[in-house]
Image 1 (cartoon, helix red, strand yellow):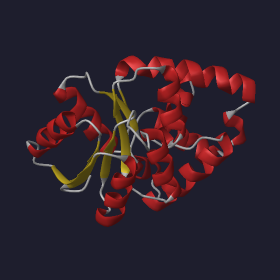
Image 2 (cartoon, helix red, strand yellow; image 1 turned 90 degrees about the vertical axis):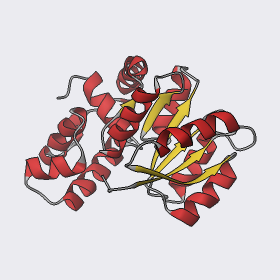
Image 3 (cartoon, one colour; image 1 turned 30 degrees about the horizontal axis):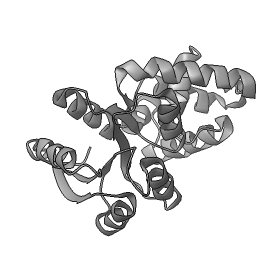
Amino acid sequence: MPEIIRVIVIDDHPLFRRGVCQLLALEPGFSVVGEAAGGQEGIELAKQHDPDLILLDLNMKGMNGLETLRTMRDMEIDARIILLTVSNAPDDLIAAIRAGSDGYILKDNDPDAILQLITTAMRGQNAISPELTSLLATALREESVLEGRNHTDLTEREQGILKCLAAGKSNKLIARELDIMESTVKVHIRNLLKKLKFRSRVEAAVWAVANQFY
């Protein structure tokens, strides 16, 4: 992780947005560099500040969280993006992960738990509220049967890296464990996501665990 994680908070509820900013301000490893009440404003801030992390509400007026997330990924905004939401609906969770979210955290979690999940995401690991993980795993398992998704389509190296993702390991740790460059790990992850038709490492990792590929 960088020494100081630069954060943008996007949420159309002023009190909650301010609360998240204050929570992060109490942590020495975080610096809130911008806050926005809507998706378009948040995108402009992301372009301006190039943050390390974006915390994004799902249900916002106008441009909602999913639309904002997809636009940011299409623009190749490189920040970690985590959905921070009240929705525990499986469809919302799955749509967010497929759109490239690095995490999905319920707002009613304890503040310490929210901080822990955010820190987990910044280490390159899965950051999903625990009570939602089984819902995502079940959905991905059922979908894989329908689509014929199979890890045997991967090279031996890609399979090894997928196992590391399933174990929640960061790119840096994977590189050290396999004795390869971190940039090479990124290339392999990009290739395996393409072959498995996933948009995020979180989706691939949960799928691997759901199919006992670890």
